[in-house]
Every structure is written in structure tokens, then in C-alpha cells.
Image (cartoon, rainbow, N blue to C red; front, side):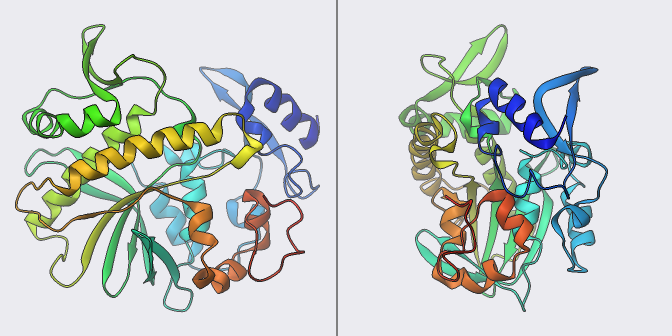
Length: 331
């Protein structure tokens, strides 16, 4: 079965793979795809790159890539086994941000204003509560002269999810109690579901509750590390945010799902902005952002031009301000 046939088969089972179908990069002879396995059985829709390291797949020559790859798979989520999957969120963030440096800065909108960042780390651990030995792994940390951005990255996760369990510990009890109003505005609440305490929508309809839970955990983590002094919050503005991939109309219901999560995220943002813990005043909560919004900034023309062409083609990133004819498979 060739790549075109594999992608068509996957797209029939899962609408997400309509985004990858007919992708110029994926259907080329230089790329090999294989099915993933779940519980010992071949997945009917999930595909991975086969037989190649990522540097070869995407034609990456930058020598820093290997060290950044090692960081990206160092977390607790078994990312080494997942990162070759086409829809991996770790893959999306690694391929976009690995090359950030003094010579190749990226600009990121901090509540609407582009700010310059010149270094990056992946899978940074922050202790959720001092002495708890419970850590949150933030996907990306971007470093600038004046800003430090902790960034949770998602690819397709927000397209659908149900309730998510919240541990019954004192520090979670407190923050969820204090944020109860903001969570209600976001359309979620703590509920008992089959004997477990879960964050769920009020009508228990599908919603990306895990994203809300993760942002609260990341907030606690950043606040705790500030209290411990392991984050330099005196000389830089500390920012916490989340970035998602915008599929446009290439995936059914994706715009509606994105807007629904954006609304909930904004309500949580409002709550966190007025909340302080461990004397960690001054953590800025960023607007929900998409990869497309970042890469379409005119300030990122050079960064996007420097991105390997195969990465741009894979994710359909247009070089809008540089070459309007070179990306025929873009949005």
C-alpha cells in the first residue's frame, strides 16, 4: 500500500487525517509511512514515519536539532515512542521551535504584541507544589531578553475530549475552589463521575477539559518555581500560554472546536490573571495562540524562510510575506 492509499484509508476512519491527505510532502517517494499499533493491534487510522530519523525525513541540517530532539522526548509521556506519529503535538512544537537562537530569533505575540525570543528548551519540569514531588512538564520554554514564555503545545487534542480526573490533594483542592467562578464561566466544574473527581463540562458533553486542567497545573508549577527561586522573575516578565494548530476547514468542525476551547480558555485566563499563589504575583497569562498566527507575523518572515521546506510543506505553512507562489498546498 502506498502513502496515498494509506492516507486515504486513514482519512475515511478519522477526519483529522483529511488534513494530511493529498499533502505534497507526504505523497512523495522520499517519505515512507506505516500504521501505528494500539493494544497489539494495527490502528485503522493512525500513521507514523517509517524507517527514518526525523533529520532525514525533514531534511534538517542544523546541528542543534539532535540535542533539542533529546529534550523533546525526555518527558514523562513516552514521547520517544510517539514523536514519529504524524499528528504528534511534540513533533509539531519540536519542528517549529528547535532552531530558535540568537541567529534565528522568533517573535511570539504576548497578548497581541510581538516579542523577540532567542533560545528554547523543551519538556521543562516545574514542581506543582513545593515538596510535593509532583511535576508538570511544560512543552516549550522560550527565552528572550525581557520575556520568559512557558508554552503548552497542542496539535489536534482540542478536537475532542471528555472529562479528566483531578487528584484529591490539598493544593489542587484550593486552586479549584478559588477558581470555581472562572471555571463555571468556562463551562466546566468538578464532578463525581464513576467514583472519581473529574473536571467536566456541566452537561458532560465532549469538551477539551484536559487542556483547562493542564493550564491550571502549569500555573501552579510556574508559581512554585518562582517561589523556590529557580525561575528568574526579577529581570524578565514571566508568561504562561498555550499554542494550538489551526486546521481551518480542512478538518470537519475544527473551527467550531477551536472557538469553543478559545472561549473556555479566555474565561480561565481571566480567573488566573486575578489569582496569585505562593506570592507569585506578575505571571502574565497569554492569549490562546495558534501556530499560524505566530508564523504569519511579518516579524517572522526570516524565521519562516529559514525553516526547512519539508517542514513547511508538511504543516502547510504559507510563506505569505515572502513567496506567494512557492507553497501550492498551503491554506
